[in-house]
Amino acid sequence: MNHALKKIDANLERWALLVFYVLLVVTMATEVIRREVFAYSSIWGEEIVRYSFIYLVWIGAASAVKERAHIRIDVLLHYVPNVVKALIYILGDLVMFVVAAVALFWVYETVAVAWKFGAVSHGLRVQMVWFLMAVPIGFSLMIFRLIQSFLRDVRDLFTGRAVFEGNKMFD
Image (cartoon, rainbow, N blue to C red; front, top):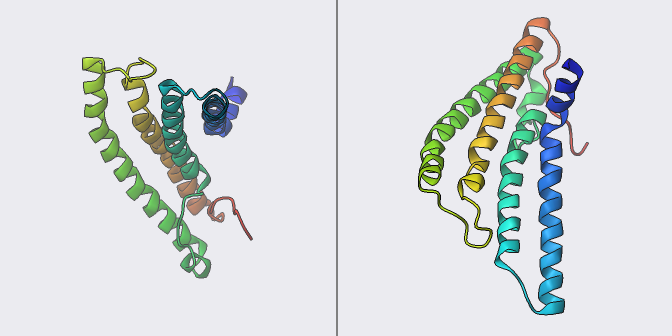
């Protein structure tokens, strides 16, 4: 069981991103072929692409928090000791946690209203609440990953290990 949870923890966002990306690409390719070859397109294809992209963005943001792959200016971090670097990362995680918690609080009302009144999308005729849930799901995943990052940084700070700076894209 513990091994399965570790696999899910390591790959949850990656698999979700893959599902939404494949859904987006396949639907978009289908719609382009339908439009160019058959001179016909559908509203549901546009909606699937739009909402898949929205889920991609929010789940991708949580993945970026997990991997410390979000955009940052870290030139100064190359010149400070590991303790200061860890404290800067901890402060950044705390600030981001507050922002995500406030955003999660404010988005709750929008989702609750959509749930209460049962608004549906035009093309798919699916309740809008499922599409609006991308934002709270994304922020909840971000909060979860920020807590993990905070705990990892505090552990690294107290054990004297170098703080996790994320995986480098280019070196």
